[in-house]
Length: 372
Image (cartoon, rainbow, N blue to C red):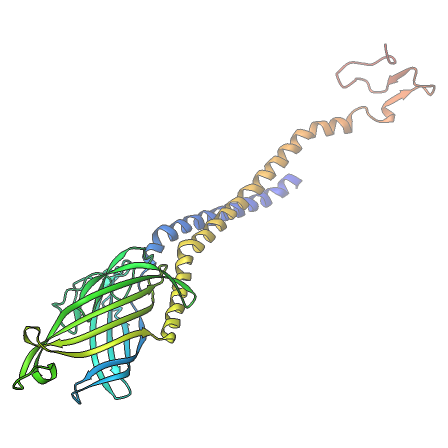
């Protein structure tokens, strides 16, 4: 077996290996494009399966205790917000979250207010959808719009309509700068909710409203107002901190008389801030992986494999061509009249010499010495 025949299977194996490398490289390049422009926009969204509890505290707060018919002042109120996702009712584009907020005086065991919301919203923009059983306190007639519990991924420095469960309506929240919260640079948004009629309560003693005259039960209007501040991680839409300055009052007929229901400045606890900051960092890392690291890694890896499959092949071809080009010269040198045995010269200074080869390299016979 000749040397060339022994090399043929080896060369065919190398060619197949290079073909496999090129195929895998092309696959990785295509995967990087699909991950960046197709998968990422669909995977970066609000989770459908979620369970989260946030706590806000208000010191030196006041509220009306219905049980004892007295106003308590200088107490600490705790607002606990529990959010639970409903993956069975969610889809690829919409999420369904149930939330329950409980404002209570734990020291005296009094529940001041409570609200329940079933929110349906776009998983990417955070926009609430008024459909599919959306309700506030089991009232499906409340129109939910604007942003709810989930802010847009990639929040902008602009004004958003933000839905307030207590006011049962959306009010503008305006960008007002940045702030560092738990090591994360957040966008701050401020929202002002003017006194808004939210409910009517029957059977309220007129004396509680400060009305003079004969005591009677009246129908009182309940008004709610608030100044809210939101600190949002713009990368992920995670609400890392919130402050709510709330005031709720009852007003008698024709606006006469007033009873304070709750007056509190609620601020998120440090433990809840840290929990949400951890969630924001986790979500941000996943977003970077889907948008940047993953596609970039696949693309670079694919290009390297393609180069590894092509560059060695070209070098092999160049080497082969080079050997073929040099072969006649090598044979010429090896077989030509270059040795001492090929020329017989005279011992005295090579004044005359004659080639022992019958013919020269150019087909002519040399018969004499130099210069002949």
